[in-house]
Image (cartoon, rainbow, N blue to C red; front, side):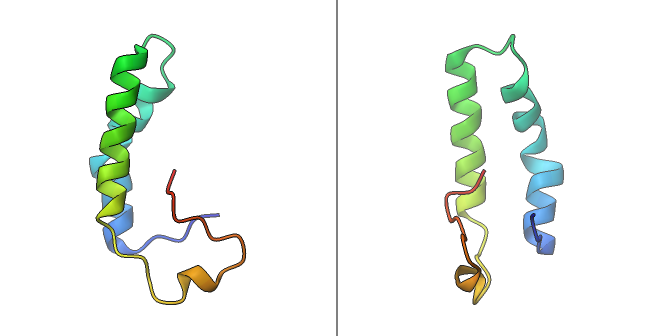
Length: 64
């Protein structure tokens, strides 16, 4: 389950979604996939983690 802030929802919906779709395409090369995943990680790393989010059992900071 995901809980989004306005910032994280915007990133998911308008910034990284195209990259995510390309990574799922079997015709995407491994080199391109690696670049797309790096892009997604970079965007995600700039989104502030809310206070106490790390108190949630099994919280994962790694992202996607």
